[in-house]
Amino acid sequence: QKEVEQNSGPLSVPEGAIASLNCTYSDRGSQSFFWYRQYSGKSPELIMFIYSNGDKEDGRFTAQLNKASQYVSLLIRDSQPSDSATYLCAVNMFGKLVFGAGTILRVKS
Amino acid sequence: GAVVSQHPSWVICKSGTSVKIECRSLDFQATTMFWYRQFPKQSLMLMATSNEGSKATYEQGVEKDKFLINHASLTLSTLTVTSAHPEDSSFYICSAHTGTSGMSEQYFGPGTRLTVT
Image (cartoon, rainbow over all chains, first blue to last red; front, side, top):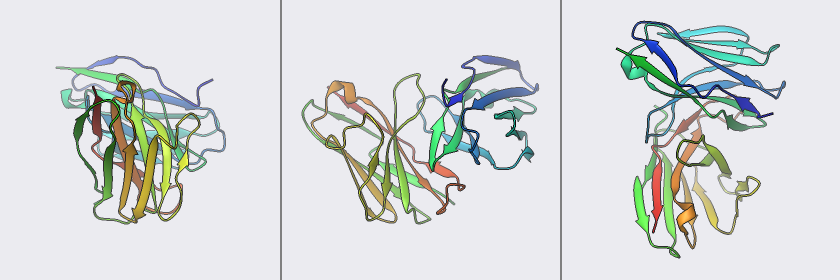
C-alpha cells in the first residue's frame, strides 16, 4: 500500500463546475495535510493546508479532512481552464512531506 | 512572503562533471530545507533533508557521496551533483519550512532542470 494515494486521472470537468480531488493516506498519526498545484514544467505551488477535521475554505478552494477515514479532499468551485494542472496531495509524516502521485485535472471551456 | 529561489533554473553538463544548485529563502529564515527530485510524469521524491549547521539526512537509496548537500546558513542550501551521468537528468526542486515545527507548510523553489549529456 502506498503511503499517499491519489487517482491519477485525468479528471475532466466543464468550466464552471466543481472539481473534486481525493487523497487517502496510510499513517493514522499524520497531523498536517497539504494540497499543491503543479503546472507542467513548474514546481509545486501551495494551495491549502489543513490540520483539523472538517472543512477549510479559501476562495474557490475547500479542503476537507476526515482523520478517522484517513481521507483528505480538495474541492474547486467554479473551475476555470487555468485550474488545469496536476494536483498533489502531501502528508506530513515524521517531519517529512510524502507526496501522492498527483491527479491531472482538465477543465474544458 | 515565503519566497524560495533556485539557481540555475536549468543547466546542461557533460557526463562526469559536477553541478552545483543553490536554494535560497529570500524573505524568511529556514532552519530546514528539503531537496526533491522529479522525473517526467512522476511525483516528487524526497532526496534529503538539509539542516543548517549539521549534516544532511539522506533518504534510503540516495547516495550521499554523489549528492552533496551543504546548508551553510539559514537562507542558503546547496546541492552538488558529483560525477553526473545521464540518468541523473531530472528536475531538482528545493523547499523550505517557514517555521520550526512539522506543522508548518513548505514552500518550493522554482526548480532546476538538469540535463546530463
